[in-house]
Length: 133
Length: 253
Image (cartoon, rainbow over all chains, first blue to last red; front, side, top):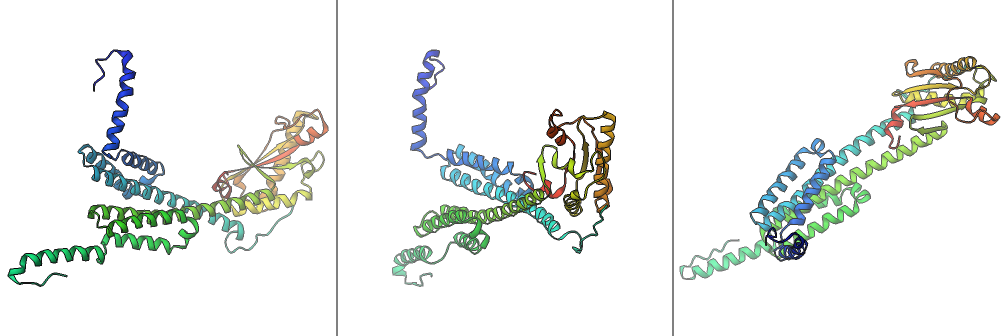
């Protein structure tokens, strides 16, 4: 399988030959590569949504399961790896959703407070005396 | 649920029958606790008016996940797999509820932004890189003088009102002139006009520390001084609102 003994010009040919073999191997033994990749993407998205601040527990759970999924895959516990990766995806999405909901809620509360001020004015809502020059 | 058959001669048969019954009972009636939790979570999402209004697609995903878990349980799938699918459904239901909160909040912010936009329109304000800018035209001042004409009052009173109600942020009042006459005179006139606007805002309840007046004379034209129309455009006072909270909070502000 190693192509390092092949002449350089043959490297592309060898690669072209190997890739289909690898792909075939993947499809015949359903390794949860896609699920683990999806979990990584979901964890990254959660991190970017500030989940570490707003939903640390859920984010940690997602990260832990992702790591366990990777270990399980290395140990060829395929079902376990797939389940862990799928759970890492939903855990990360939950963390992201919590974070986004939190931030959006805070924004809305601030804006609502501002709108209340605009609508009713300060304090008891009594108009302040207007002084014309 | 257990077989009570104790006859020794039929012991083997009884054990077999008992365990078969147990297995069947497990499949048919006793709900898997994880699936039951998922069912409760999805039901809570279904009962959530926000979810129905703002995240119906997410709810369907959770329902789909729940169906998969229920079917796996009914088909007697591996317990680990059933628990796994139920877990996914439970999380999806929670995600649906959170998405609904997010969507509703975003809509509130958008509505508020629209309202701020209407307020700014009424103030004849423009959003620029420097902040929100309100331009007072030359006609709002006495000819070659710094006194405000009554026609300026409505706009300035609205602005003062808006600023009283929105306590954060600062107001920079900038006077400008055309290049007719001496630059010293122009500088002085621009300072006096800016000061008159500042005085008016402060007299109408805007905190003095928030409002700063500055004159730029003829140094910042926005049009050519070669035409009368251009010169008129250059004679102006700009009021720049910086970091005023209600504006800054609104997205795009």
